[in-house]
Length: 51
Length: 246
Image 1 (tube, chains in turn green, red):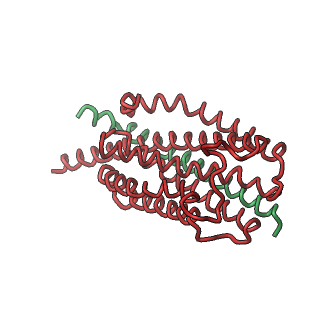
Image 2 (cartoon, rainbow over the protein chains, first blue to last red):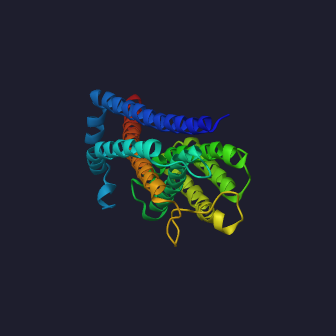
Image 3 (cartoon, each protein chain N blue to C red):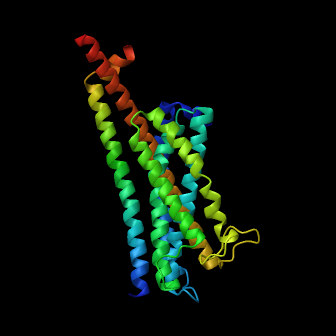
């Protein structure tokens, strides 16, 4: 294997890991925003604050 | 400042305004850093072009320790000062630190094969870094094992503080033992031993990686705050339904 292989593999792996972390952060955040909006649309947030 | 951020609503507002700027600056610096690494920085007289691996390996190693220190400070915040966002920060930092530790180990291994002739050597720096990854994985597993956030935070805080013993071992392993891994060449009392043509791209990549990490951490804290709001509302709703049924 040439040195180019080791360099390319290192950069591709780093890019994939950082991209994975970013995608996970975006997907997880959107899921929580949706879940919160769903609860509040059912009036659960407002009721619990009154209670 | 830290006390002002104790209010999750205030934190959400401030971090929401800050996040696009941190992300934008991270992308800009990463672009500048990659340009310098690939088109300006010279090949090393011994390592040749393989030195390019250093520009991602070293920042990843620094961030591995940086996020562990964030977790250790947050652990103190949880156990001693009982800061309401400390455990949230601790939980958000763990996967980011683990990911950078993994990058550090794999890129180091990929550099080691052409330079040392082996992917792995059980020397003090490499072994202590592997222990660091195992501690990160243990912390992530413990977060998942205990459902109640406050109990999980206390258990994880104790594990994090015990594991913090490994941080100085990683940092000083190359000084305390005779290792195959080279000694520190940037943060030294007598100044860096790397030529400016390589040091500048390395530092720019390090700042870019740090900003990427900070952006991911801020985003992770925001998501965890929302997750806990959702959990609280679900519990309140379940209690209300129970009361109605009774």
